[in-house]
Structure formats: C-alpha cells, structure tokens
Amino acid sequence: MNRRPSFPARLDSTPAPAAGRAPAAPAKLPAVPGGVGLDSQVVRARMVQRLAAQGIRDQRVLAAMGVVQRHRFVDTALVNQAYEDTSLPIGLAQTISKPSVVARMIELLLGDANAPRLGRVLEIGTGCGYQAAVLSQVAAEVYSIERLRGLHDKARDNLRPFRLPNVHLLFGDGMAGYARGAPYAGIIAAAGGEAVPRAWCEQLGLGGRIVAPTVMAGGQQALVVIEKTSAGLQQSVLEAVNFVPLKSGIA
Ligand code: SAH
Image: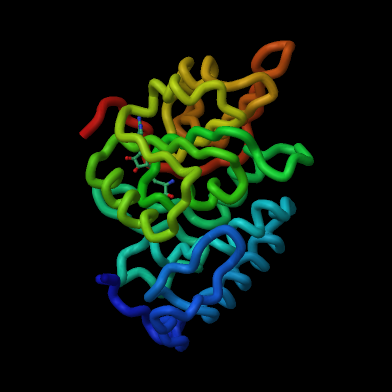
C-alpha cells in the first residue's frame, strides 16, 4: 500500500505506473511505485549537468547523482526544491546536504582509483538517508550510522522502497565509528566536529580515505581529507563548508 502523497505537477506529469507494469527503472535502483516517472529523471539530469559544470568530473559520481531520487527524501512541502542546489530541513534541526556538496565529498572519497566501485564505506550521520543511497551506487557496502532515533527511523522508511541490500543502517554514536565493519575503504561524515575522531583513523583501511567537515581554528568548518598510506596518515584541508555539528551520544 503506497501512502506517499502524490507528486507536484512540476516534476510529475507522468501517472504512476499501473500495477503489474514494470516502471522505467535506472540500472540497479528499482523505481519506486507511486513515485515520479520520467519527468524527475529529466530534472535530475539537469542537476547532473550543473554538477558537471561546477567541476564534478567522476562519472561514477555523476551517474549515482542522476539515479537517486532526491525528492523522495524530503518532506512533501519541499519537493519542488529537491533538485535545487540547496540544503533542506529534514526534521530534528538537521539538514540534507546540498547536491553539490554530496557529489564533491563522494568524489573526494573515491579518489583517482580506477576501480568501478569502492569497497566498504562508513557514513557518519545518516540523516534522511539520501547520501547513503548515493553511496550505495559507488561502494560495495555502506554502513551508515545516525545518533538521532527519529532520523534513523526516517531513513529506514525512506530507503525501504529502494531495496538497497548493500546499505546497512545503524543507530548509535558515530564518533566511535563502527568497528565491526572495519577496515573501511572510505569514511564520510555529514556532520562537522572539532577534530576527526581517532576511531575513524583506526578503522580506515590502508589506501582508504576519510572525508569530514572539521572545525578549524577561528571556528569556520573546512573539508578535511585524510589518506592512510604506508607512510602514515596524510591530511589535506580543502574548501570551507557549513555542516550541522557532530555531537556525541545518542538521542
Ligand atoms: N547524509 C545526510 C545528512 C544528514 S545531516 C543526508 O543525506 O540526509 C547530519 C546528520 O549527522 C544529522 O542527522 C545528525 O543527527 C548526525 N550526527 C551528528 N553527530 C553524529 C554522531 N556522533 N553519530 C551519528 N550521527 C551524527
């Protein structure tokens, strides 16, 4: 039984697929019955063009951004803004990151590797589950941890219809990482802390990368990339960003 509200006309002029008829589905991600059809694909394709124009080069990232239906992760009242380059509220004072930032961070996470997809990835801050869905397209396994029960539940509801067997949602404090899934090929944080927790560095595999917004001296957040090489951890500080705070404990 589909209890989702119908989609505004701007994005959806296509009727929901009739029962028993296969909806137009992108590779790997099953189309969600009752969702938008081809029109949202067009709007997403435009978003992907803008991302490419802004400098996102990795075809794996652009393809993933083109496939995941971002409008299904935001409240009905915000659906018209789902493909604009803006962060949006998802409840409990948290936000879904803007598409350009999601794409940029995942591009950094993937690095220059020619492998078709990354191995196991840990995401800190599931939020509404959108970035986890994008990660599911570029990584073999996605462990995503959220400290707010309400959002953990929301992400589970949001992701259920997509049936992504490689996404594993965890409820807990991501500051401690998730040792049982380690070592990770990549760790990506959607919330900014004062420093990158030691546990993340320990749980990162050799050759892996951490991409995390981190508060710099002066209070401004910047994207930090940490690579684990045989010579040790190498850190780069990149552009300024604006994420919700990384907090400890659960609620
Ligand atoms: N990737 C998310 C963005 C969510 S915003 C999306 O696509 O929607 C960042 C999230 O990080 C918030 O939901 C916040 O509750 C969560 N968060 C902050 N500190 C955390 C911690 N220590 N462990 C797990 N989640 C945390």
